[in-house]
Image (tube, rainbow, N blue to C red; front, side, top):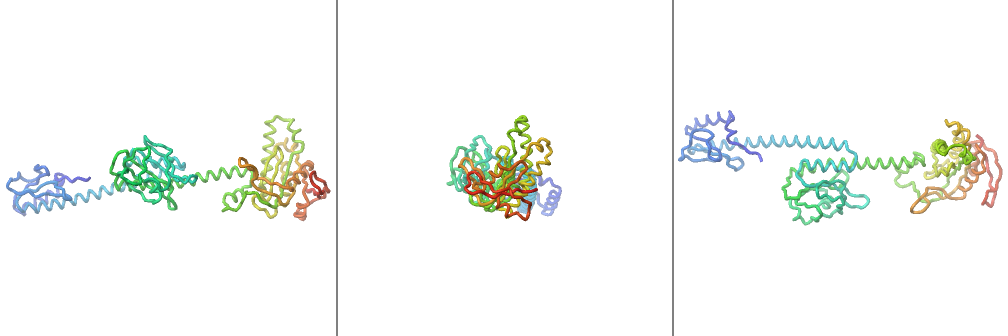
Length: 470
């Protein structure tokens, strides 16, 4: 509380001059005393004279002693003292406002530099406890998985990190629903209070509220009864508001990192454009098993087992990785999906999970480019020894996540898949064999020659096969 000293007031030159002039004009002796009766100005008072109080907001800060004319000076001093009080209040408010702005600016800078969710929450309670007296504090966020309010950061000797609340439960849960910050200076008398492990007598609770939603709750508390003020609430709410924005940014950053990790893993098997379609689709790229018209490519290195005997295992793995990297790049360039690697064999699909209207053309184009790419790989040993045969087929198959609840594979199942595999197995090195369905869809786009009609194991009828000339 701001105090006004009558003694300091009288020491001001302008006050002293005014008093002297008024005293002369009144023509009557007066004296001015402090609240305790000590002389501050004038002559020693006569006990027969009256005492008139000098007040500031109804509080006596001194006396004017004299005849009835002295009451005028008492009124004047009271007026001047109250004016001085208002000036000090204004100066204090201005200083407090500056401190608040400077404080929030510094906090904002710290929040801006932090993108880790738990670190943001920790910073929020650290800054709050610096400016408001407390024995504990916590930040709770609404969990998307459980729908509960769960503590992600806290401080205090009795902090129990497993504290969980439902929205609407306890004081914090209620404030989460209302979105309005509150002071509760006598927690135990509040009917919403749910007793926990922590000793809490007084608290301030503010929602972590963004423009779109309430993300959680920020709470600061004391184990003793204290009188938190509206000013404390104002500062705490400002910190909570800054924290909410920083938490929202941290969540966005966390989700972005998660998406990047998913994208990075997916792009090892699926072309980047298909990954983007999956990540940003509103719902329609379904991975549930379904019938689809696609083209299937099988590629395998001839006599790979024999070649492996010529080198150390580490060298074979290195060369195989180099080969597969190049082959996958070619497949992705044409919008294909790598279904799986089986040793040195590559299985790719064109038309799943996203539909490709010209999947047959893309499959042949990929096969040709794969054969040509091998001839241009920078490792001479690969160029010389990795000679591949490729088989292609097209038609309706079942495509989707297939397997057990513990392990699922996104794959294709059906007769057309088996045919592509068989064609690959009979193709010679550098040869590309295709089914009649592929040929009919692309006969005007590429050069072909008839390979013949062959009887595949497990097939009742022979199928007509073509070879791609490239």
